[in-house]
Length: 446
Ligand SMILES: Cc1cc2nc3c(=O)[nH]c(=O)nc-3n(C[C@H](O)[C@H](O)[C@H](O)COP(=O)(O)OP(=O)(O)OC[C@H]3O[C@@H](n4cnc5c(N)ncnc54)[C@H](O)[C@@H]3O)c2cc1C
Image (tube, rainbow, N blue to C red):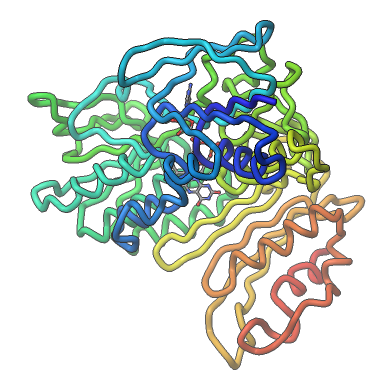
């Protein structure tokens, strides 16, 4: 069996590794990767930029040479430009030599991820306009940040990556402005959480401009020198020595046209990662699957999903029943001194869907009150009739993200707030009060 894999990072290499472990020499695998890096942890790039992680190579799990030794040839700088699903061939361009050739497959795995969206005025290149997708991008930004003459950083987009980058840039003492079109940072989260993050950003010297767009860029000799911001009818110019575009991503799927896709171009897959075309699978940021909470397609471009989805494909192609995977929609970040997490639906998502829900929030202790003073907040969203948990958001200090994770499990299992309220959780003062904050949040839900 010959398996061709497009993309050599989380989804693609998870599929390749699992399949090779299961079938050994009985499978021929070839991975085409258009970039020069494979199997790297993009999630660590903001911490590499902040210099918490010193070397970019620490983010690389395995190199192309190491994969080749284990029987998985990875052709770097090879871009798949087209797929013929009738002939079962892919057209590949060697980006170093310009050679173009076709390769055949029995099974095709698409793990091509997503690229940064290039919309005006970020649709042309400047020497000081950056984006972050791979380790080399991180190195370029880091080198620019080491330059003391580059004082003003403008970050476009206040999603996870933009916010993590704002902290990284503050480590170098830069004047950082984050520009966000929505009315709050981290727009997928409820307003309480976004406002807490905005306060944390302000306290740590990051300027945040919400409800604002970067209308244009002023350049001198191919370098951006100022950004023109627009909020409503008002415009304002701010200095910009470094601009980082982190305002969204677009699935990299243009090389295949006859497969079912969502509006953003992501390839629709079922829970077995099968696409609408036989023998073609997709996983990770290039794909979209249905949420276990709502039953509707949910684009969740996260490393946590890409790894699992890739492994599912490896299992299926290797003839093994994959482990069940339900997409809950779980994400977290640390921003200076505050942690925040979201699982399942936020209140605004439940409202937008017209669900009959209730929302409930508490402030609790991360540890036993006599043991530590760190506080966290828990917001629960649950079905007003069945009392099943639909979502949870946590933010604050101490043990914040693990408590959101309890609720991810509760959502998976279809638990009600009442079942969650008497859950037999571990207790010892360094970890919680005798009534864990997650139990209190559940028990006080009316
Ligand atoms: C800065 C940053 C921080 C992040 N932090 C987190 C986090 O904290 N938690 C989390 O869960 N997720 C995080 N993510 C998201 C996570 O990194 C991605 O979800 C994950 O990398 C997706 O893996 P993937 O294999 O689907 O796609 P990618 O990692 O994008 O890899 C796809 C590969 O396919 C290649 N490719 C594309 N088109 C072609 C083609 N036509 N031919 C050949 N090759 C092609 C690309 O060059 C790319 O190398 C972060 C991402 C970034 C950028």
